[in-house]
Length: 207
Image (cartoon, rainbow, N blue to C red; front, top):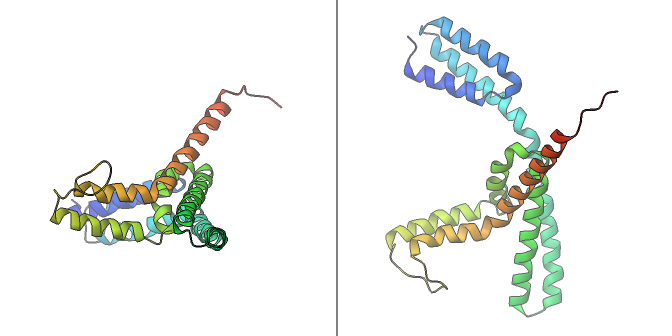
């Protein structure tokens, strides 16, 4: 009988293995069961986990690299637009701040939309991770800080319209920072579903 730890590690390796390596994953599981819980079962499970992690990393490398490149490109474009907007708005800080907020939201929406249109099965990852990468992890760090402060005084009412319990503020603020990316991912996934459905309804043609 294999140890519980070895079985958990082996199950994790099976889950990590991408579909393209399903046959290898099945072979590794068969070998694991053949060991019968012997002294080598834990080492085998760990080896399988390392292999599966490598396979998964290679399988996900495309959209991860595209996300990083897209964030860097959009961030550079955002910076160039910033100087144009500031020069245009001059001293009116309200105008350039609101304009840059809209520009940033549009760029983030377009980036997530394009990524999900290419990798639709990673929509939930792209919608959640890309806004964090875009803003260099700042929304998540600020969310944790705000949540900690909120838990210290959960009944404090904010001077906002409408007023909300202070405990809700971190979630409201995080949504403000990431909504454009999430919305872009949803629209990209919806476009993929529509085009996939139309393709499925097309009559088959013979050569």
